[in-house]
Amino acid sequence: MSASQTPFNNQKQSFAERIRRIGLGIIAPHTTIEELGLARHAQLLNAISLALMIAFGLDLMSRPRSTVIFYFLLGISAVSFLLGKSKFPRAGTLVFSIGFISATYLSLFLGVASNYLTSVLALVPFALIISSALTSRKIFVRLAIFATLLTILAPYYSKTKILPGNVPEAGGIIFFMGVILYGVTVFRSSIEQTRLEEINTINKELRENKTNLEEHVEERTRLLAEVNQQNQERAKRLLTISEISQDISANVEKQTGDLLAHIARSISEKLGFYHVGIFLLDENREYAVLRAANSQGGQHMLERHHQLKVGGTGIVGYVSQGGRPRIALDTGSDAVFFNNPDLPKTRSEIALPLKYGTKVIGVLDVQSTLSSAFKEEDVNILGTLSNQIALIISNGLTAETQRHALPSISAIKSTDRKQKQSGYYYLPDGTISTALPANSPILEKALESGETEVLAQPSRGNPPALAVPVKFRDQVIGIIHIQATEETRKWTEDEVAMVQSIADRTAFSLENARLFEETTRRAEQEETIARVTTQIGSSSDFSRILQTTIQELGQALGVSRSFIQLGTPSKNGNEDKSKN
Image 1 (cartoon, one colour):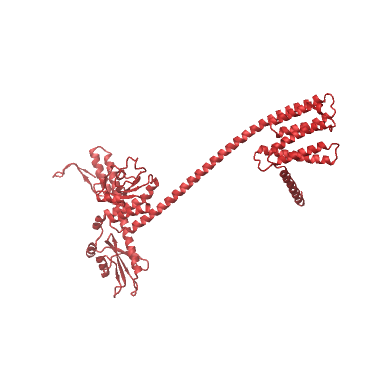
Image 2 (image 1 turned 45 degrees about the vertical axis):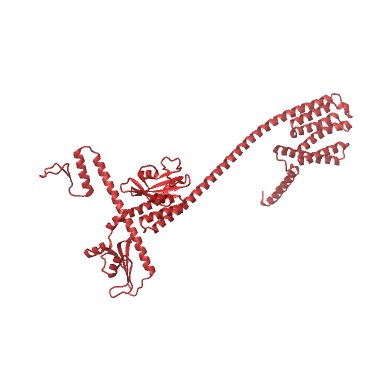
């Protein structure tokens, strides 16, 4: 097919499609009919009625011998078509069936029929076939009986000549045709009923699947909304934890007691908890003593020096002994929870251990007025705070030791007199190396006062300089000495403040490094002790135990000789001993 023929074919198809749509629109049932079977019956009735109207109209144009029957049939077709287009298509089917059956016997009664047998067999079977397709079985049976009776009784009213034997023949044909059509109708109804049941079953399954799918979508949507809400809450809580951590870092210079009280208030205010308490273990590690709290009940507990026995009743006692977090989702039913009259509104509680290394030094106790307010993820979130608090507490608890361990002002001055401590210096060419601090009045003055000293009026050999003490908890542990390359250099307030801030952060970092080294050293010592103890405990022989002890000690300490004996050494030195 050439390309030039395509537009014509498209036009032809388009015209045929328009004709088809117009035809379907003409025979379409009323828009209010929703039942599918009734709508199809109405559409079929409209199509047959419309076709017969056209046929009878054309017959009338040919001027038949008897026009009465044609006008009657044309009227019946028109009425049936109009009823089929209305809300009452069943009435249209009844009018069509009765009208066409009656038309045959009317022609016999008027004597316009040319032949009895031909008239009966021409229209009555057609009417019965249409009735069997469009009406119910009860109506069809009545119409078939009606047609059979009129056929048999024709000799009593017909003005058309009836030949002998025509009545039984016509009556038998109409009767048996009715029986056959009734059987076909029953069979078709059975098939339609089976199909309808299958369709109903499929529709039911589809509805159930749709309902299940909708429920599944709703459930997934709900779960997604819950997850999003949990993520938002978790992100918000993490942001709040970060703010609390920054607040703690900004107030780290406070005394330990004041800082712990500030931490308790900050956690309660920013996270919205009813009570926040910080417990520390006493020297004998027998009791967890409340050291800070935010609530009014907590203040009463502080006034009477509230303490809980380690391993005793309550989740604080449980956590202080086990070193593992504990959540009481419902304080009324949790057997470990201890009902505290100072905190009557508590409905749920979480306690986290404050650990320095592997050692428990206290407990962070958080309580809420809401039941099941804490989740497992809160253990990780609040655990960040508990670790930071533990570090701060450890620093505070070792403050007294630090005063002896860290060099004081007098110690630095005494050390300067006895021996020079080494430091580091930086030159403009990028060189960094160790060096002994230079003797300078500005250094002596800064060490003596513990305050920043600025040399604003340089003299010969003494260029403009800054001396900033490095302090941790008001303890001078070092000095930063900066000299300008230009004698006309003027130190600005921003420059001085920057050096002071760097000095403060340097002190804090040095302390953290010292604590880390100390923790590592303690961990190594504990590991060595555990290893040696394991080796010793693996034997039950006296000699083997003694030999293992001095061997492990010698290897651990790296000594040239180690000695152990049982009993007191004799004067002559001839004691039993074991050497390594």
